[in-house]
Image (cartoon, rainbow, N blue to C red; front, side):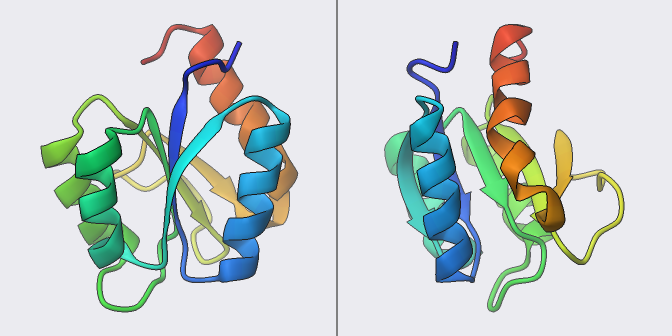
Length: 119
């Protein structure tokens, strides 16, 4: 179901990134990169052209909203999931939203995109 789906994780918390990598690998997704902020994410997105970007909102140097704007220009087909404890609903810059309290639901959320042919 999730075969060949590439994911870029952008979050300033290394423990969250590690947990996300583990959850995605269990469900058969390929994590192609991890970034601590938007500045690190841009070259990784250019290099790997991910299908999905898990994007935190509150990060140093470049927040999620600004990062999403840049990513839309370089990987327009990628689905961006706002992944935040700060936001309460899906922001305009994201295709989906998941509160960090529900981290265990992140892989099923992406699987739903893949299953619906949403890419």
